[in-house]
Length: 268
Length: 238
Image 1 (spheres, rainbow over the protein chains, first blue to last red):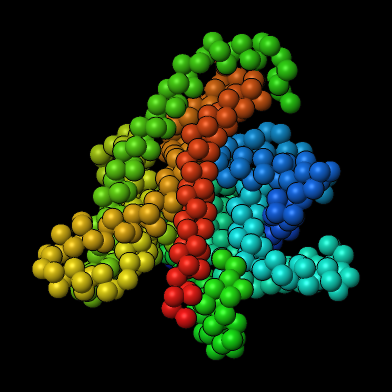
Image 2: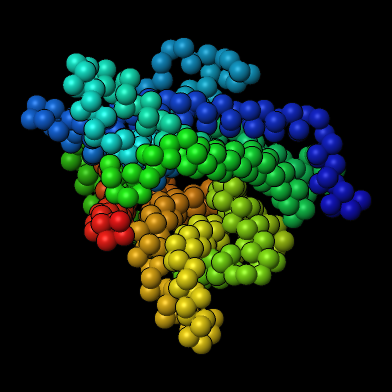
């Protein structure tokens, strides 16, 4: 039997395919959940960094600057290692669920916390970019209408911010999906880790009693294809969104656009 | 917090300081060679993406999309295992800078493409009309104008690459983070988690922070300057 045939026969093994597809599911769930949590934390951090400039609130700004800079300038794997040791796992993850043992669930929780902490720092900077694109006149207008600062943020600034940055946030999902492969380092059960697991046991499945180069190509090729299909379709969506945004801007607000272009109300 | 305030744990770090120095050396070595590979690939594919030949454009597109849409960890594992199982084990550091160089090259190519595209088309035409060849046009006219647009994002790419050297862990690890990890989990050296991670994190921060703040400062000043030019030039036009 040819080695390539042996490797390909693994792809016809329903148990292996199911095992890997479950990994894909975990990758997607972890990434999307991480981005959602990070958007919340990142928004708070960005607001703190941009608007807590008063005397009493200055300490909040300093804290968020430190947080953002520290997490942006250290590797994700560093935080995964730290969280695996130091992060406490709450009781509800300490049991069997999702078809995983309680040890694996605890590990999953800790690694996910690291991913969220790390992604929050990145998303905070993205949100800040969006906040800066909202013109200051909007805040003044809100104040003149008697809105409190919290109301201004919630009803006026944040909706505009998120409309401006949604393509960037979506492309952050791609980055997070790629980053979630770092979780394989601590043997959390996602696509990358499962591919490695199958490879290390490939001699039992390909009917040859040995692991060959073709196994590497077939298994990692499969994983790469899955990652590529997911990420490429997201990046296509991002590109369409951006294109749409450009045309809508030009079409719907010709006056504003003209003013912006002539430096009137320009707020780069 | 295991050993954050214990002098013994800190002392252990000092005794084994060689480990950390070796880690820094390996990380920097990997990063520098990977950077050279990435720059080379980035320039080649960036120029290909901005050329007029459709075939060159699509080759560059495929490279960028395939590399950017798959995790660097997977690429590194693939490279390492493919070479190892075919009998040419290249060593951890070599795998590291090859994989990181190829991965970062895709980002460099995008940065360089965007930089070249930021130069108005008239500049290319003007250069051509003055009889510049392709190389002369790029070297004297286009690159000097696009370098200020290219540098800030390129620095961010480099910062990410330095952080990504930690990927070496999955193929055996000789970089700073992997050595720190094996230091804190090792039989003789283990235990002093907090001090070791603090040292490792501070080193990464000290390398990356100056670079990334330089990039963001440059970007802000560029934006401000553009705005000024923009505002000054508008009344004349109007």
